[in-house]
Image 1: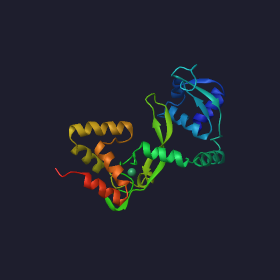
Image 2: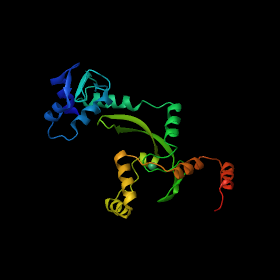
Image 3: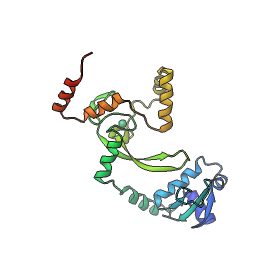
Image 4: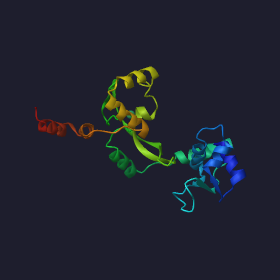
Length: 218
Ligand SMILES: [Zn+2]
C-alpha cells in the first residue's frame, strides 16, 4: 500500500487518471495490487472509479485527492485512529441487525443462542465493518452483524484445516454446491426454518410459550 501511495503521488498526481493495467505493470510481483491501492481510501485518499465518475471507463481510476502520508508511520497511525473512531448511530446498528435477521453473518448463530461446540457461552451480537467485494472487483466497506466470537477471530475450534476438509468431504453433493455459494459470497444464507428460530430466540419466555402452544404435534 505504501509503495502504491508513493507511485500515485510521484507518477500519477492529483486529478489525473491511471489504469488498472498500469497498476499491475508497476507492481508485477504484488498480487491484488489494485486492492492495496484501494485500501488507501481508508486513509483519506479519494480514488474514483467509473461508478463515481461517468467520464471514466471500467479500466480507469482517477486520483482525486492525495490523503494521509501513509509512508510516514506517525501520519498513518493518526489517520487509522481517525477512521476507527467513526461509530455507527444506534439507528444504523438496529437496521443492520434487522437486515441480517439478528444472526451472525459469519457463523449464522442467533443472538442469545449457545454455541454448538461451546454450550457454556451464548452469542452476543455486535457490528463489524466488513469489506464486501462487488462483482466488478471493487470493494466497499459495510457494517454487518457478527457475533463477538467471530468478531474477535477466536472462532479457532473449527479452524483446523484437516477438520474443515473432513467436514466438507462429508457433505452431500447438493450441500457442497450450497457451501460453494456461501464461500463465494463470503457469508452463509438462511432457510425459513432458521429465520423462524432466530426470531423465536429474541422473544421473552412468556411469548415463547405462546409460540410453543401454536406448534402442532404431527
Ligand atoms: Zn459468529
